[in-house]
Length: 187
Ligand code: IMP
Ligand code: MG
Figure 1 (cartoon, helix red, strand yellow):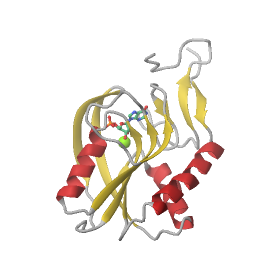
Figure 2 (cartoon, protein in one colour; figure 1 turned 135 degrees about the vertical axis):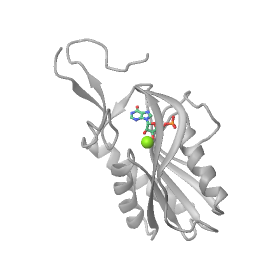
Figure 3 (tube, helix red, strand yellow; figure 1 turned 90 degrees about the vertical axis):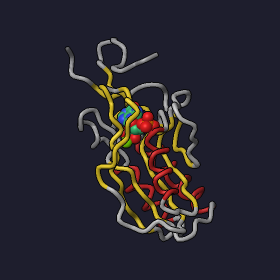
Figure 4 (spheres, helix red, strand yellow; figure 1 turned 60 degrees about the vertical axis):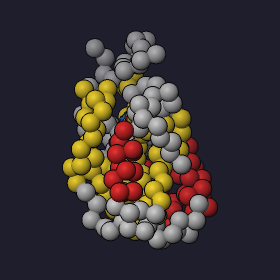
């Protein structure tokens, strides 16, 4: 087997430009008493960039984290979500922006949104770097979407396979490099 290589889908410059656009869209939604909640672990890099872009767009959010685990068998979601670490802030009456890496089945975001609404949030909006269309198991749309993603298992920019590839500054797909199909290619 050849060493896996990563085929770039969205490079650093494209991601950086999109983050500035997303931040301006978020600022235009006129959030009040904004609390940003980054969903760990996969969103950490996107969140770090988007939050700084929000600052440049003139917002002064508070920033929090929630660590959720959506159990997966290999690369396929099983549908169960657990809280591994909760937010500490009071949510009551606030506008919340959830930040996650990928919207796929939608179960992770629905779980987080329901949780924060049940705690009295005024409004919960969602920003995801990637959206995989046609994969939704529950009804949810993110208000802010970086890019539409092909139906491939992607890595980089915080996203992993067993904790590898998170460090990549771009988003890509594992590629065997020998003419064989991309790993996890479902198409
Ligand atoms: P959902 O609950 O099915 O929407 O799953 C979303 C979560 O699954 C994301 O936050 C990711 O952590 C993970 N995920 C889904 N697709 C991918 C992928 O292609 N690469 C890496 N992680 C993924
Ligand atoms: Mg995740």
